[in-house]
Length: 185
Image 1 (cartoon, rainbow, N blue to C red):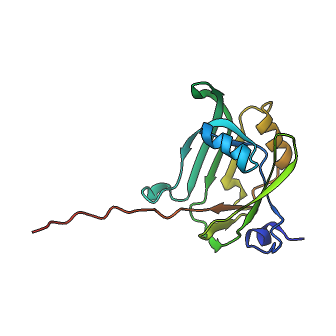
Image 2: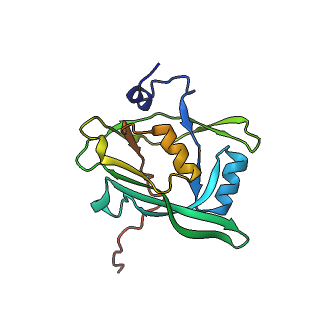
Image 3: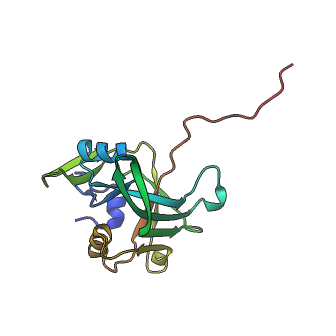
């Protein structure tokens, strides 16, 4: 048996431990369909109001704020509603991460008939792993908007009042960069 820190650092050589995708909220109808049919992701409509780190915004480099709101799919696409399903706030400012490589990560899900499926996810750049303990766990706050909502209820049942144990972040490198202009004579 491996503990969370060992799992995060890639000690599970079988790669059978992984992520259980209970409710994958998504704001793109095509991605919802593809996730369900191709990747065994139990995707559901939702939309997001976010503040995320960016290579172009160093002031929020280690701060995440994500509010996920209810959405429905209709013939005209995604319809947004104001009801908040859940909110996540993560403040890692001042904490020191360590680079880790824990891929592939097995993602578990079910098909429409409830049969268990698994699929690997590879990330080709190290994650930044932040170990949290009793002094730093409060830097991660999860608020469940409507406890009667299936996704909030399942998440509350899964984690109960357990404190956060760690955070993994990942910043994709830019595909292209626009360099500064120069004068041509």
